[in-house]
Image (cartoon, rainbow, N blue to C red; front, top):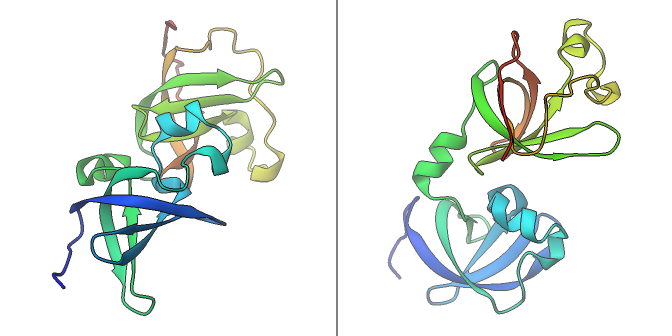
Length: 177
């Protein structure tokens, strides 16, 4: 069997969901996993329920991230290698994001070119050193609307796919679509 390398594109068949994502097969009997953070954001926005992201038997194009020899399993991603590099933000990076949703109670969800998703956190909470679990929603920022683009700083990363951001000062917001 030929060796596969990171970044190679493969056509894989979804075998079914599991706790961390989906089990897939590709090539001649190779097995792999597609973890939730490695699934494209636009797919998650269209089908928010995790088990509905793919159906058993769906064929998808994926990219090899790595190989785990102990379990003879490939880790796969929907992101191209170039997109994966662009998703690697560092704490403190300042980026422009687009507001994708504002929940009734004030939580603001954002997206960076559909590569990284996240939530806005009030800067005052960060400066006061509050426990992250207690962060209140952003209130009083009427200029934020769905589609608006704003400049934010990466405050906390859960993984390459999800970050917590705080608005930059002075606040720079361009109108929504």
